[in-house]
Length: 225
Ligand code: CA
Image 1 (cartoon, rainbow, N blue to C red):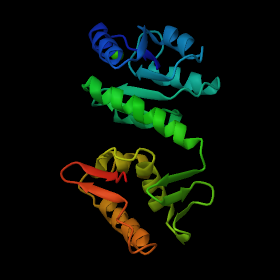
Image 2 (tube, protein in one colour; image 1 turned 90 degrees about the vertical axis):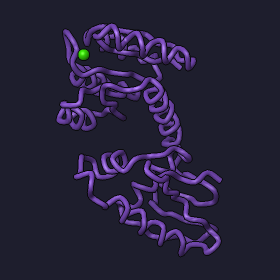
Image 3 (cartoon, rainbow, N blue to C red; image 1 turned 180 degrees about the vertical axis):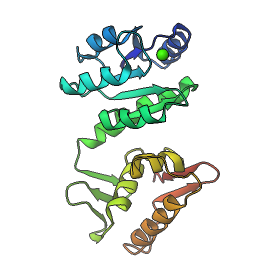
Image 4 (cartoon, helix red, strand yellow; image 1 turned 120 degrees about the vertical axis):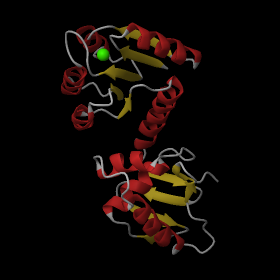
């Protein structure tokens, strides 16, 4: 897998480059936004890891330019803790994910893999995990020919989890992806929504185990059967 890293801090660039290389990824590194943009526009990368604060051209401008030029390569933004506004702008400009500094390179590698899997899954209209089918066109969830009606939020949440079966998502990640912004972390909207999905999917088939598994202290995941 070919990864473009646009990062001006040499120390971060070094640990990311060597960490990803250890995981069989081929990393091309650019130190500034202008070079990064040129490289990104070649379209020869499978993913772009893009810092926001960069010399010459900032990361959000690079991202905006890429999307305007029709470059659809998935982008993971690297943000500092105090850049919440930038992070939201970035997601609106077409970033696929973000990672707050400081981070572990394992986490970045996992995000890159998850993104690739998700994008591969997005090309199909239906997702099927353990007999539970989700149709992206009709937005229908079914099992053994019986279907359930989910609200838009419930559907988005289930779809988000079903893209990467087995991967654990925290409440904060689910909130941000499904609700689109930062909620008060103490809110229980995620738990309430998951309870409703479980109720609806349980009604499809009494034998069907709940597709959503709670992982104590961590979050939720789709059971892999
Ligand atoms: Ca920087």
